[in-house]
Length: 127
Image (cartoon, rainbow, N blue to C red; front, side):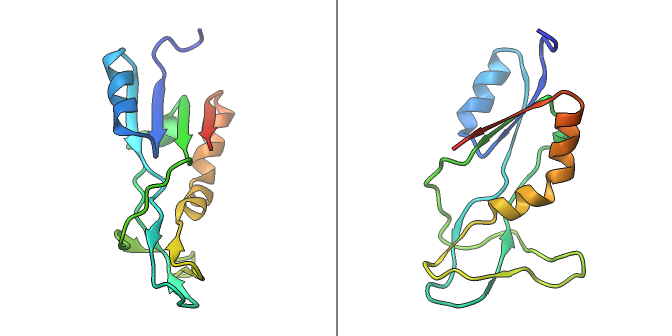
């Protein structure tokens, strides 16, 4: 094994996953790329909210576990409104009333994810 106790970032996983890893002696941190939330159903354009949290040492992770197979939905948006590089709000359509910020947040974390892969890390996506 290359890393006997690698830094593990568990994204959008059940909190028990991180707890079990830590009990087994692994250096594990919990984070989220965000949680889908209910917007205004039928509204054509809505501002996207960032309810994500990246662990403190995310960029230095050796292993990233991402669980996107969740049915968890928040009843309301939380966090802060997402803005683009020009400072404009990110707006999306939500014809069914559910807004999922995870793809956008993951795109924003692309440099960190690339860095993890470039230094020999692994990313495991559970869908």
